[in-house]
Length: 162
Image 1 (spheres, rainbow, N blue to C red):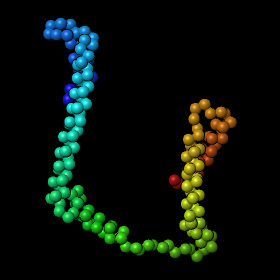
Image 2 (image 1 turned 180 degrees about the horizontal axis):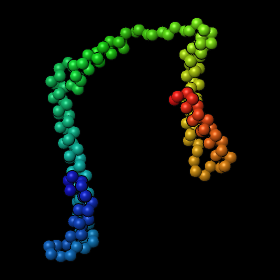
Image 3 (image 1 turned 135 degrees about the vertical axis):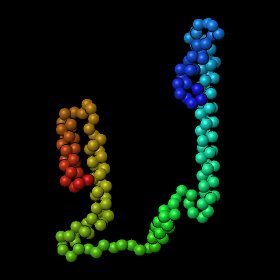
Image 4 (image 1 turned 60 degrees about the vertical axis):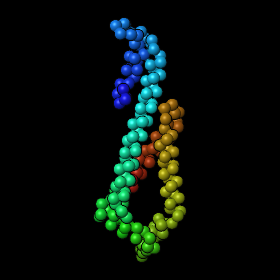
């Protein structure tokens, strides 16, 4: 029963017991049901605590053996992490050069502006709302509008490749 495999059936069988050589009576010993539930709760927490304590203890041993580096990373992973930290701490920012063609120049400035970010966010929120509007029991006129908008959104996603 401590493995919690089929513990409910065992609980009912123990609650039905009367004595040696006697026929079981349904719910004869209600105290056995309470005992079984308490045993499962305490036993589960005890096992969970034991497993957690073993894992934490083993991790502390690994961390102590590792010294100044991480216990869960290999040497190459630690080197990669160190390089990433150095690069992140440097203030080098990449700047893309705007194109020279007037149409591409206008498109470049539009997609790098905060207006474009807000527009994309509005389109995403609008598409989520449209996709959530469709439900059972929707009026026919509203259903047609929502289905039409959903189809337009699907076509737009296919065309843009999103």
